[in-house]
Image (cartoon, rainbow, N blue to C red; front, side, top):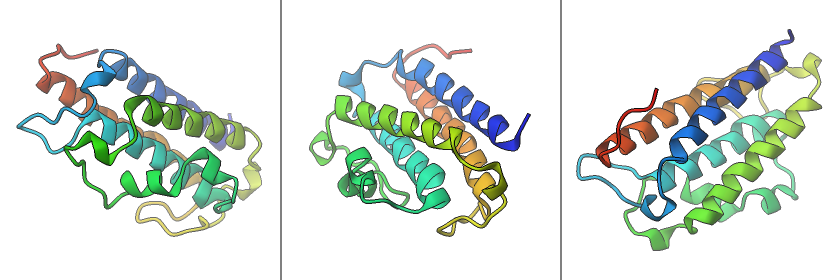
Length: 166
């Protein structure tokens, strides 16, 4: 099995897990921030879309003008690394739009990775990242990063009064 194939399988596994969690949360409650928390589901999902774009596309091949049809600069800013989950839903696109971007970026990522040359995986990433120096490290971090945020979504579910999922 190739390194890229293995990394893509991990991305698909992480996304499947996240989708299982999201399937139990009504989008009408995506902006609910529990008193015990500092985030909400909408920010988590938007942040995952932003991160998959940045890690799996921008850092592998650089930004492209057509990427703005995939994920807008406003979306990237709203859910970027230094952003925080604002309690006001008006600060964000509606849940359906966040989910569409989340799905669209993931679909494009898988399509681009299917055609990515294995020989380029050891090359330095196009833009620097704290944890990832090479392109394969960026691809691998996509799944680990998603699982980290799936854990936060799982905690939000529990704070909403739902039972844990196994």
